[in-house]
Length: 462
Image 1 (cartoon, helix red, strand yellow):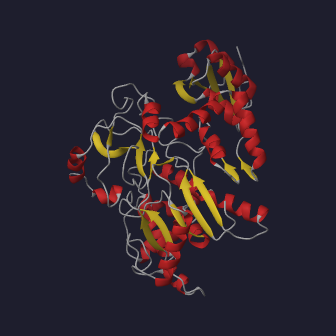
Image 2 (cartoon, rainbow, N blue to C red):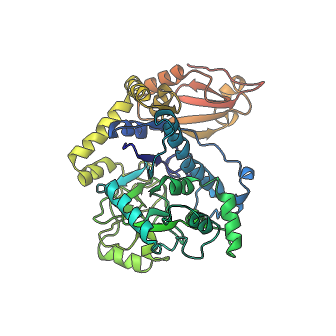
Image 3 (cartoon, helix red, strand yellow):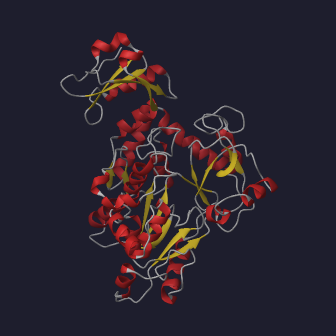
């Protein structure tokens, strides 16, 4: 990390159910934390569980359109909170290790992004922002402050620098607004860009001043958020996509693309798959696409392959892992080559065993200046156990255990990769207290979760 630049990573969250939405901040497999450690210098780590956002604290949330979000408005609010969580990491580093000296530049990317080619050098982004800022040219994405000015435009015009406020985003995936899956700009503009929750009230007021009455998706909300501050949007063509296990309709459509693409994907949803459409087949689908393909992928669409949909089905007829084919690792290896595939295997090995995983993350915790996350042991136990899957109430599924549990308890099965004995030992090591007010009982490979209280359950291992 250069002394005048901060890199902020966030991970999209639209669901806390594995396979039904994109990955959650408190990732069940723990590999993203390990990948960050192996990638290079990391200054801070923030991992947190998905909890509901109280919409009443953000009256401006009435502007949000629930359509298209797996969890409706609540999913959008959780995503906004996640993006905004980059700010405390940056501010902590500035205060703790930089003697109050602020970063000049901030680049925001995502941990679930797949880069099919190296990202452009930071110097090119800096030069772009400074050149456009000096000239004050119109934004090409339609989200710049030059269109109508507004409250933010007046504030920016009063700045002593006289430079235009500029923020770089990817082409495509804008859905009538601005793509928010990558961003680069000066610190001032970046603070505005990532303050998704804090800015909802101001966006609502600005919406009223320009006569917009309809509800808006995340991308349109982001467009007005930048515009209200007079920030000019500059779209860039970037070679990355967002890995997703989200299950889409069982058709070959332009929703999810293959990671094996020869053109920039600009943050489109992607996965390793056996394509269902390539070449001229893709051209035919794109011609029938509404809205336009450029809105979705950006200005270049040739060289893209589409993945088949199908909830709970393997893409390519080989079974499924979420909505991915079971041979996705081999597809990944053929796409990226043996060297990068080897790195991915090393990451998996380092988190496969609880002891190895814990030592690895303990070392990482000691190297970073800010660890805002559960303990390494808790992360690794969760990695070994996998994703809890609700089976039903104890009275319905396991009547023998009903006397031992609170009436409010639920029985959850575990989907895990490790051996049952290891999973049970990991749960026992985690203790019965659980997280917050949740108690756990491990029973023959199952986990019982109930709210603690007058009838709270104690930890039982058998």
